[in-house]
Length: 149
Image 1 (cartoon, rainbow, N blue to C red):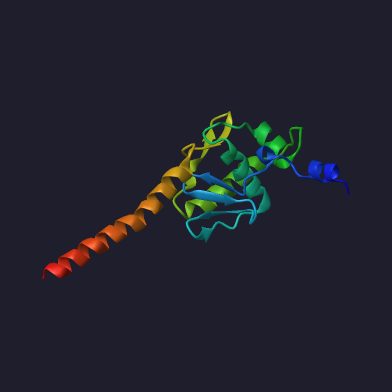
Image 2 (spheres, rainbow, N blue to C red):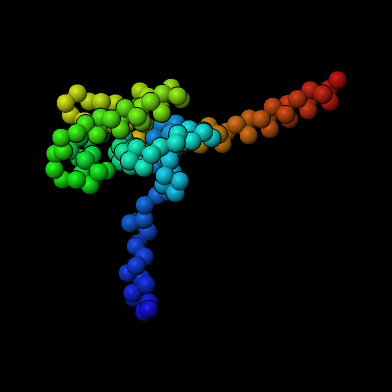
């Protein structure tokens, strides 16, 4: 295979899909095709995962039932089912076990959206990064106190 053919098989870095997508406290993992909150997996079915992945792509943007049918179900016609509503209810029930059912919002007659910050991972990881430093500072303070005795 020529180097040009190989180059065409591998997309540019901008075209790569990220492995993780953060949505508030929820982390979606494309490799596992599941969501997790801290260290506990939700146990999402494939369509439930796709639904959350699509909604997390544009947090706080309402996606219509028709958009979700096209993007997640890959159908361009209006089926006579309530499949979207059923899958949303199943995802909400799984999120409810973590008190996060409220992040999946139904916008009356318009569609669904995830009510999460646009950049949730920044705050979560910044807080985790500070904790070890604070623990070290506290242990140093304790060490100073013990020397004074």
